[in-house]
Length: 264
Image (tube, helix red, strand yellow):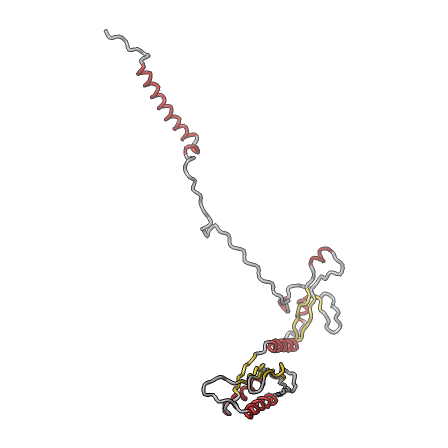
């Protein structure tokens, strides 16, 4: 008769310990997945959605503000409903008038309504005394305004005077001299500033000018300058006869005068 198995066998005890631990750990993992999913996936990197490269989620860019124009508005570009009209003869301001009424009563072909002063909104809000409530405008004659603008353009052109340079050899041939003198007359008539250089050009087989030729060339240049009325000498003549002489003259600029040159 076999003896009954001991309930406290060491092998059986070890088996029970490891099997129970394995079952308990598996059950713990299942519970974590069911009730605490964030812990189960905490090690996985999160994926973010980028909207910077998508046109559907970008806001339209705010348009850049337009640059301020220095010129004040005129005529239908005046958006203020009320204005003062300044009398150019007396300098007095009219009572506030509707801009629309002023424009309707004007001869738009002959006159133009120009804003010359804008009210100071800050003073009006603060209740400052003497604050201008409405813009100040004046009526300009279109023809006179056009003539004034043309005069300003003309003066601006005068300030940017072109300079021409001309070189003459003391021993220049007669035909070449005639061509140069016609060119000089054209430059001065157009109001150019001309720098005339009389010199000995160093060329091979070029003969030296005689004393009479030197004096004759200087006389011819003077005579041509005198022919153009209003030509003035910018600087006194510099240099020495027979070597290098520089003459700078300015064509007529509505200031007629007679140039004076002297040669030693």
